[in-house]
Length: 378
Image (tube, rainbow, N blue to C red):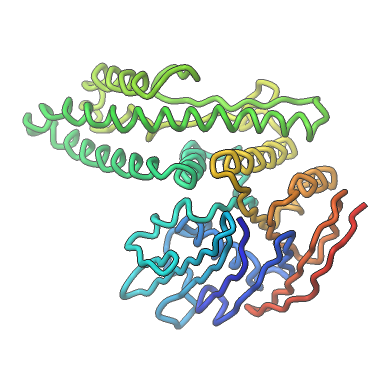
């Protein structure tokens, strides 16, 4: 897939701007706080319906304006596609996919596949379990339509069960319906765990291959899925459903006593290991960056495997986080991948491939296309 054109109206510091991207590498450069990351943020919203920087859409509206609009044109499997996202303080969010209005922004998930690699991506390696769950959920929502439905239904069940657990302390009738909630939760939670485990198993193979290449075979990585039961590549959905129901029933009195849902995939995590050591506790910052880089490349290969097309890669100020060796490795690995990069200057790229470079100078919410040329990087 490739992005052709992005139009921003009253979005962040952009009153009205449009960009036409090249199919190769696109560099957005300029000083800090000029609006480079805002462009990547708009692209990411058009792909996932969510910003990676804020949960409040009011933050995205240009100051003094009632709302914003993002328009995106792309090509997927040789078909032209368009997405329009609108938000106003009065009418709230709406989306339009190929001229058809959608009530929920989540309906756009899977239409355009983009991967964002930013300094915040390091938090997947060194941050909380919630950040890693979010990483997995976004990846699965983009590649599996069923997953979003399962996740919504599961979260709704957990919310209702939590209410019943709290009321169960004073009203016996609520305690008596907990087993009914457990039956439903085990069905949806088991399917979620199965899909997450399958994704982790695919990702870890790609990731370890990349770690081997980056480090010349000196280091190896591993992803270990941590959920409510022992995991196994050979086990099917029913295994996870049965294991979750068993765990819920065995732990029912404990959940009632503390009025919390403590068993299920909403408590999931996955460990990222380097040479058998937990990356959060034992890896240097340089090693954590290498792991984040290899995880992003693994995500790229995973999406290509599932969807049959390479996603678009968004790199937000990450080259400064990588040494020259890892910069070169990353850019060599982006053959035939449309890439949009933010930088403070016209970054010199090192690659053995001939690549089309398109440059955009960003200053105070204004975009100037500088040059488009084919460069031999030998």
